[in-house]
Length: 443
Image (cartoon, rainbow, N blue to C red; front, side):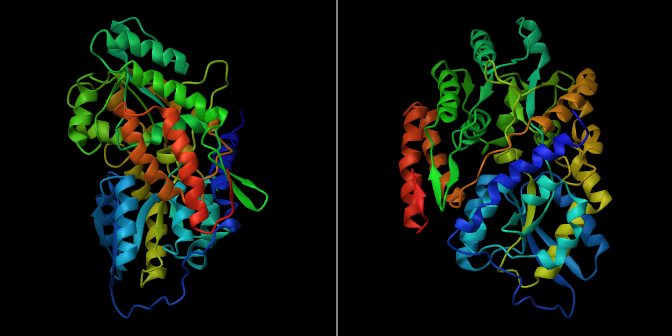
């Protein structure tokens, strides 16, 4: 694999989601009406990533004319709800963290500002995929902060104790889960409020929930890939191989991993930060392995949800869009800020969205967490950038769709409905939702 291959493949994932937005019913907000500041301005900034408070302090210390006022939001899903409320109340923050799958939806609602004139000249400083995630129809709405690989992290001591190898396939994953269950250990955790497991497994399996068919959107939650993902998840749930811990009680969730109640996670580098900051006794007992494949298929990792590029977006309600854009660019390019966020002990362990992001692998994974497994982990991370799904499309009503998916997923985890029931419901619901928005749809 040549040195540019991972970057090119990652680029396609973000482009696929955003290149077809001519089918949106509305355009996003622009920089029109931007106000010039006569003195220092304070810009509200919302985010959820570990370490953001630190780099906000760094920014404020180095800027006398612009100050950021940081508010920590619980997580990615909470951000969508709080932003919706803020937009409706006309008190949205100037700057906010979000991920690529939500950009199309927020632009279609007019919630984001086009900041191309302020940051467009910086395009070449970023990986093409990361930069594309901040765009809709060639207009730039934010500045990327990360590009994320995906892999499995697992407890080596527990796997060794029970004679298990890290699962190479999802069949292996289920089989290992059944062995661990006999000893009161769960192989994975399905939070009832977070359906991203279904999304990423469907994406990996070649599903296409949204696609373009001529001048219409095509919706298909029941294609072969979706059903393949549903089968794996249903096996896990039916056999009680999963914990059901909510992210709402973050301390309890992390304690469960530290205590070996749950012993694998499919994650990206940024999620290591929470583990490092929360654990007390399992350091050195974790290792990385490739994301499991579907049997007989080549390695493939998902591009969506938390594996998407993170972006600091500027809202259309911000009075000082130019200053907000400048702040976003600084947070993503200042060496001190980038180094701090890339380190899982001080930040989030994010792989920067910059063109030289590969140089941050050693910073983005934790030697404290991995111990003797640290060096081998570097190759796992680097290799995963070359296996990113390249053909996933985020639909124009993604935020609304994901909210409905979230509500239905809780019923799946609680064994109140099957995954296939959820998919059938989402098929009908999404087609109806797009039609209600005046968007041409087939399904």
